[in-house]
Length: 240
Ligand code: GRF
Image (cartoon, rainbow, N blue to C red; front, side):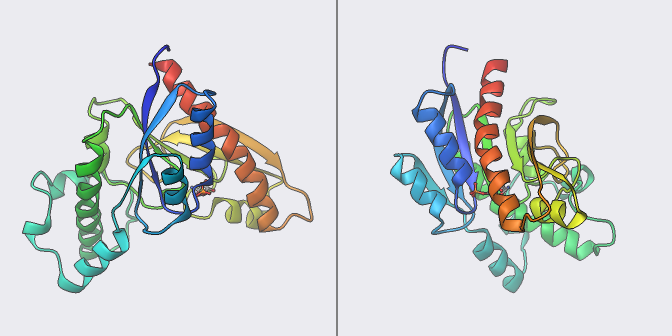
């Protein structure tokens, strides 16, 4: 790979993974260039990190969007013009059976409304890869299909704080500790229609000592994440 790949990034918080990727790009350790950093959460430290590195930033405030849809209800005119509810419902693997029809409908429609706002910005960039660096929102097939335009190809990467397929969900390090595992780790994988289920690109592991607290495990894990994410982005660049 001679040319650099163009990478978009989405975050929700502190952005230490984003920082590791920024540093790897600036130090020419990986053949990548960051086009933008988007956040679902205004005012987070990760946005500051991006701005400091001269990266374009934007916010799509999910809490605000979902909150006002909850209050006012969803009208057909709020939905993206190309949103097909039955298609998204048949593809999605995010909502557990047992949720009511109304809950599923609100979930998929409200997320697609927010996702359309992300897509309106993201699709304006010439992007090879979208990197979720601590982006704490699930993405529905509505969004995924508009990024992975060619069937069978994956263009969205995520980092997860556990050795998948163990401990999917929002608290990977906590679940690892509570289960009593002696080894913890992190995983970079492609996004598919499920939660933390897509093809694995890379993993790193660390030992858990008897005296380790959750903070110790998070510290050990994050240090591995900062090495792993740039490596996996380079693997993707090499594959093109
Ligand atoms: C990381 O532990 C990542 O695995 C998880 O969220 C955390 C984000 O941390 N998805 P940061 O914002 O990169 O510091």
